Each structure stands twice: as C-alpha cells, then as structure tokens.
Length: 206
Image (cartoon, rainbow, N blue to C red; front, side, top):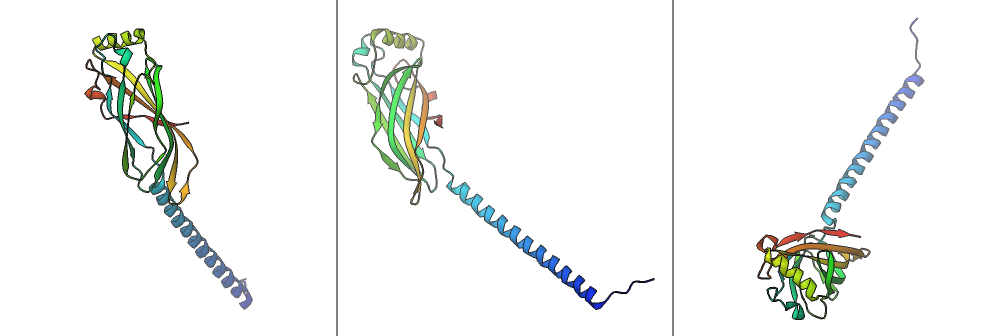
C-alpha cells in the first residue's frame, strides 16, 4: 500500500532541506574567507620576508708582497660592498668586525664600522686597512706568502661578523649574529685577481 504523508511531515522535510542548504552556504563562505585571508598573508609574507644582505669583494690588496722584508711594514687593504636587497625592510648593524685568514690561520682582525642603519635597496661600502697594529705576521709566514706568490696566487679568507636586526616600519626583530666568508686571491703584484673580484660571499646566521 502506498504510504500517505501528512503536511507536517513535508514541512519538516522542507525545513531540514533549507537548514542543510544554509549550512552549506555558510561553510562555503567561511572557507572562501579563510582562503582569501591566507592568500593575503602569503603575499604579505613574500613581500616582507627578510633577505640576507649581499656581500661582494670589490678590492683586496697586499702591498709589498714582492719584498723579502715586507712583513715589517705589512698592510692588507680590502673593499667590500654590502647590499640590502629588501623592498621594505631596513637593517640595523649593531656591530661589525673583520678577520683575515691565511691557510686557516688568523693573521689579523679589527672592528670595521661603527653601528649604522641601512635603508632598503641601498648599498654600503666597507673598506679597511689592516696594518702592523692589527696584523700578526713574522718572517716565516711572509716567506709562505712569497712562495705562493711565485706560483702566481696567494689565497686569503676574509671573515666578517656582524650583529644585525631587521626593521619593518616601527617593528624591530631580535638580534641575529651573521657570518660572512669571502675567499679571495691576489696575484704576484699583490692585487686581487680578476676572477675573484666582485665575487659574492656566502652568508649564514648562528
């Protein structure tokens, strides 16, 4: 026998159907809002994500490398560019120090610059001369320089250590300790070889 349904039954079915539809619509709206908010935050993150500063060795010179007693008045002069490639993020350099290594032995170190702030999309030049007061050289080490010079290349490593903070509008990040390692080679004239000039230095944080 065909079952008969009352008007109340049909009313309840209609109400349940409407409730299900409204629930689905609300869920769809909620998911769309979450998606839009997620996309906005992702775009903001991409635009404000801090990029590491870019360091390039522009110049590196060891005058008097050809002299047998050059170590008595030895000097090492270097020139490095620091590029802040961020669009909207400035960088505070609270300290910056440099060290020169030869065969993994440190031969000199000194502070490089006073604290400074670097605006977005700007380049700062860091240049310094290490003289007798900051270099630890003797006749034996200088002779090693000269032996490498006879082969055409003397390889050094310039390490730069800095404590930095990122700045976005009025917000400032915590302190980050940054390390920069720049391998560089000079020729028989004591000047940087062309293949090593403007070479980008690896940067890492600790």
